[in-house]
Structures are given as structure tokens and as C-alpha cells.
Length: 88
Image 1 (spheres, rainbow, N blue to C red):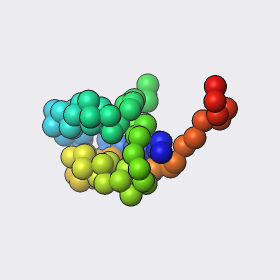
Image 2: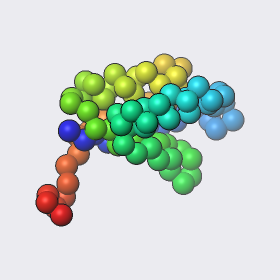
Image 3: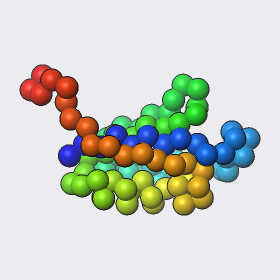
Image 4: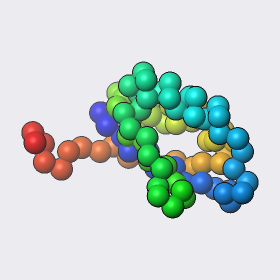
């Protein structure tokens, strides 16, 4: 199953803590295949992740493992997604 996780920053850009641990964990998630894609909005107001997992609960667990989520810097919405044109 595929999930789109959209995370919006809950603090001002000047209040965002050091993100080195966030980046390390995200690289590990991408390397493991749990996160297929990771994007940041061009205005830097939010991030978008595409996750390939077996359930929405698993997606929530993965997203909740990010330091910025536990520090309440990012708040995510997660939805299951599917191809608009299956088979293409």
C-alpha cells in the first residue's frame, strides 16, 4: 500500500531546531525502502513523504519516529493513495 504523508511545520522557520538527526533518520528510511520519496515544498512550509508499507498504522509509526514529530515541529496528515490510471 502507498501512503502520502504531508507534514506541516508548526513553528516559525527561525525556531526550527538542528535537523541533522532528522536527516539521518530520513536517509535510513529511504535506504530501507519504507519511504519511497521525500520532498520539501519549494516555500519550505511543509514536507511530503511517499511511504510503501502494509498499513496506515505502520505509516503513522514511521512518521512518529521522526524527531521533528516528537518535538512537535512537524504535524503530519497521512492518506492512502493509489494510481489515477492503474496499469499505466
